[in-house]
Length: 147
Image (cartoon, rainbow, N blue to C red; front, side, top):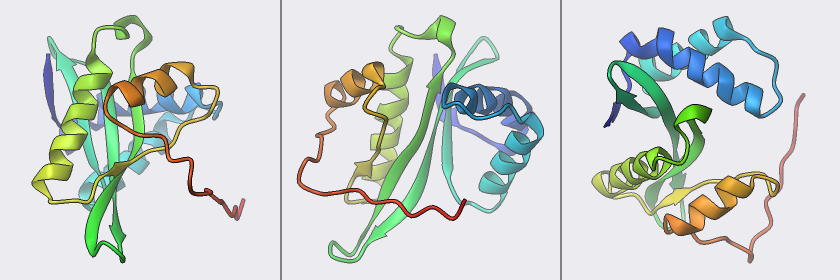
């Protein structure tokens, strides 16, 4: 299993995974939109995407976005997306992708990595603490929507 940074050449295969990820979160399939979105993130250096590859097949990915903490005066990362094909789950691929996210945080001297998941995501809510993430119960998370 190879965990590596995605490149523009991965877009055709990566967009299929990204589309399946979005479908998991109850969004309509939009493969062309997925291609465009991922291409823009990579070409504009707006995110870092790592893929899990085996025998020239992409089995999963994670996407991180940079944030900056004014109080810490450091960068931090948001692990926004994590997805592994259903037939390859339970093999430790998610943990390897998370480990790569933690490694990029160390390399960039970031304050840390943040993520959020739905309360109903039982797999994620077991995976993240076992990967060293601590549930923050002291702060409220608010969202304003323009949709």
